[in-house]
Amino acid sequence: MLHLTALCCLLLLTPPPADQAPDWNSARQLAPGILLLQDSLQSPRPIQRHAVRINLQQPGLKFTTTDRTTEWQADTRETRRQTVRSFLRSERNASRPVILAFNADAFTPWPAPFDQETPANLQGFAVCRGQLVSPPAGSPSLIITRDGPASIRTAADHENPAEIEIAVSGFALCLKNGQVQPSGTDLHPRTAVGLSADQRLLFVLVVDGRRHSSAGATTAELGQWLLDYGAHDGINMDGGGSSTLAWWNNNATSEDKIELLNRPVGNGLKLLTPDADRLGISERANGNNVGVWLQAP
Image 1 (cartoon, helix red, strand yellow):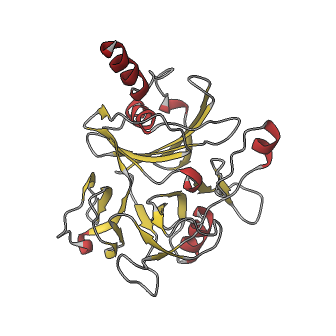
Image 2 (cartoon, rainbow, N blue to C red):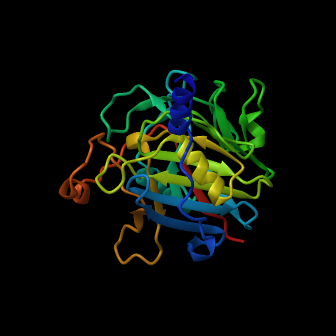
């Protein structure tokens, strides 16, 4: 009986095998070096995935993230919350023509008015263009240095922010040295970042959840999918209503060319009927976002 119980627990904690290997040759190019691959799974439940692969060797590739608030105080008041689209818009207004943006680290206080730009305190290490935004807190970070190399690691207490272009953090590793990390069975919208073994490719994965069309994912599933996409290490970032992926569509006919690539549930509601699923899209103001752009030669 003990062996049977252990086997059942192992099955619950281990992600199911992927339906098929992702085909990046069929991906949509958002910009040079930036590919988007979106699909829907029906097993083990309805799931909608939005994956981005970024070539870190692409000439002119730049990163930005949420900067300090003007009233900055470490571990107390570090940033001002913005939706991903508002962040993208403000970065472009600051002459950083962001193409792609997504949410990153968790923040406090929460709960808070989901769509208001209120002060926030980040939960892990964050650096914006060489300036410390939030000190190390022991959680794993995506760190992109000013001379190019990227890594996924835990920041040291003595990190020199001046050497870092951006750093953002998440809850925990979901993929470590090519090994999927076990997790519980709770299902939520998710955001993850992953890095290839040669540190040349960055992956961003957003999974919709709390919807009739997409029930969400476990963190072990995130790790398995990042591995399938080509990552060697990966971090489970802030998820739930924070999970958002947006881009600047130069070909859009509307005046505002910023478009959502996923369907966030920023207000925290569960949209479990087809009508609610179809109509309900809401963005959360997050304490920490990331933007990707290309600098003109």
